[in-house]
Image (cartoon, rainbow, N blue to C red; front, side, top):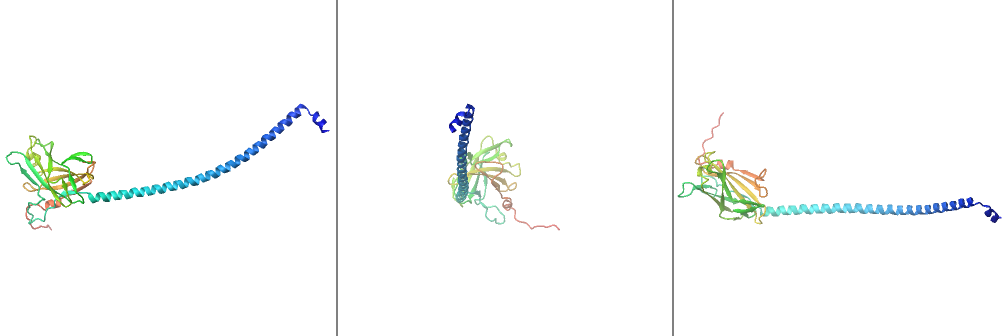
Length: 281
């Protein structure tokens, strides 16, 4: 009976049956693939969650390493600063002694400006500088300070009264320990200068500049000190009015790293005896 029924089926019916079976197989395969895909997605999500946790832990670890590195850099910076401070020199004028009746004395604080014997023109200028820093100062008569060719020199005006002229300087002790003083001196002569013009004696009793480059004992921490020397009255003594300190890496930059004025101390060295103070009412 079933055989007759099967034989009675037309060819088109067999085609429909085959298509239905194929569709069923495809649906079954799709279902199996979907289940596998879902499982893979769950496994991928779990792996992604684990990766996220690991990434967050890595980020935190990197931040901690960064904080430790920053702390180490700060410690190195502080250590370097302390080390530099322990060997940093600082040159300044020699402090004058307490004046006796405000009279000038011939101590190391004196700045001597003298003519050259046997010559109509020519000067010898000498002064002492003291190292009040913690380390040895290496004064550079001619050489590099902070990568620049700096020289111990004196600056004044040429014979024409306008142009600047320079003369090299010399030092009695190039290595200056803390608390010690050293003589520096200059010889000013030549056809381009005369005494009055170089010293600007026609301008506020006179003045000139001295440049003193120096470093620490390790040839580091270069400083260029620029001294402004003026005369105290027409026939008064010479004295350092101001010292500007410049970073050796940037000489005469926008601003000095430090400036010291000695106006009060300079005024105290006028040779006139003190008179009574008159107060107006």
